[in-house]
Length: 424
Ligand SMILES: *Cc1c(COP(=O)(O)O)cnc(C)c1O
Image (cartoon, rainbow, N blue to C red):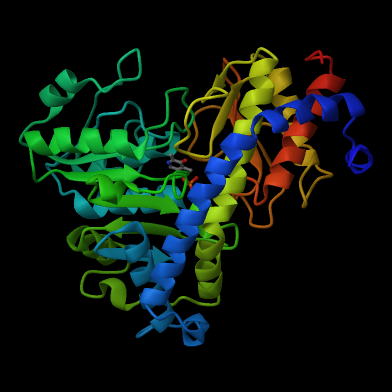
């Protein structure tokens, strides 16, 4: 084993440093496998319930009328995530698009949107109009309010209560921390927040940005009272196989609104060809629970290694997990760059290229990204990114297999070690 790692560029010292943690993490990894087993069965049950068959994989072109594969897949998603209906489409280009679609289709001029969990994900700032942008909700007369989490990470119930008013129509709850260092929300905590909001105003639509959270727990946010969950298929639920796409699952009315916005009033879910990608959506969903488990193991492994070296990590080495993201505060641009170089060097694709910071559309600061992915930009595949701003935190996620995640983390450590940024 040592030899093959060496052939890949991992020095003996780095390999040995990593090994000690694997032993220590055996019990936690068993718990992750148990969740994966439960979720695997949940997915199989949904596939069987809706009688998925070979005809579902045929795909359609043109208008896509009566696309059996598309319609059945949406039923499978609805069952699996415990919603009334679903919209799962290759025409939803990414997670931001899915979120924008869910918001724009369920809000009307004069309505107000509330985020009770602080600043939303960077790209949503332009969707909402926090940063002025063409086509934002703000341009359509939809206002926005936000209450931040308390210093200790708790919900600020008093401020949330004060923020809810007669205009408040939709509450957006981001499960994952995104580019922040706040804790990720568990499904149980999301449920607590939703019941509080609904107690004050029962007709508020509670939407959860579920990006990176799918299959990490046995339950999903719809089971905790959410009206809509939204995510990207090049993250967890696509299982690494979906080459594009997004989903919205939830209440019938919310989904219909989204469908009429995605295609056209009057057409809704009836159109939208599934082209040649529909089988990968099914097969990706089938693999998603075990793929997510591998990514989760990688995140925990990284937390343990980097915490032991004195870098602040969120979540820390022992706390419970509710998404696959691992933040490591690397404290310098040099260390952030070295980490990303390591992830890149461990990739199955493009391992020979060097990541450089760039001004990515939708983001405020320059971002450095490492990804050698089969699907471009896929972040269920092993990837790392971080905005070039203090405290130089890297957000590390994915790995289609645990073994690849492990190699990536060891390679990142190798690069930091080579540059004299850590001592082992
Ligand atoms: C990834 C992500 C998004 C946006 O998804 P893209 O596919 O990158 O557009 C939104 N919210 C959260 C929490 C995310 O992690």
